Image (tube, rainbow, N blue to C red; front, top):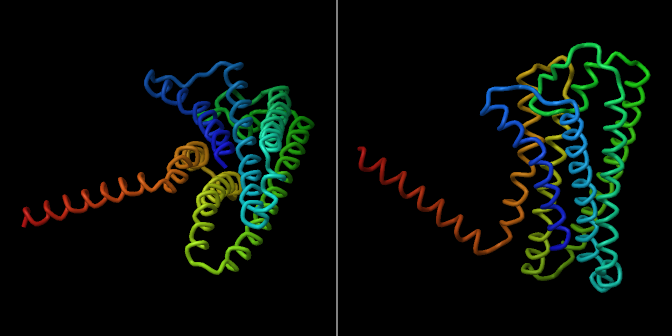
Length: 263
């Protein structure tokens, strides 16, 4: 799990650094421009990191499944070589997926201006500027293939967690059940956050679309998940939980003292 968490942290760092620094630069310098090649690079790396992240989350689910449901086979099924190969497959699949989307999207002729109305280069907003019907259908086909892969990964995750929870509930000791749940819940929370924000952004009804809503949803799924992932996984650290508890207790006590002194 530590090896996969390292890879997950790299994808989080990668795809938040793909969008946020440029957005901060445009805000500080009061400019809204990006070069054509810069836009292509931003779209490629964003799609690359976000694809690799979901494949890694699926692999991490398999890691939890083997550790809890087949602990005696863990060393055989998930040795160092197997983990390296699975992580490499996740990165390679993300790279191929991103390369296909970027190459197809930027091969389309743009005939409806060059204003995206977004704080980073995103496929749906670029497609709105295109006037190529065949290219649009080709990209739509790639999106369907990507959605099918995501759906298959999601089904695998759901099936794995059904088996995991069934195995955990059969553990006789309460301490054992608590330990097993504590290793799964952070991963489940990260997967839920990742999927819910992305689905909410891309599957909303077109009638409810507006520039301000699109911007808010883009921030929600492109910035919030990678920012919260380290925090969610760090909650398994007892020292961090104790420090967080002390901080919250101190803030609560300070608020009570302020209210008492004010009255």
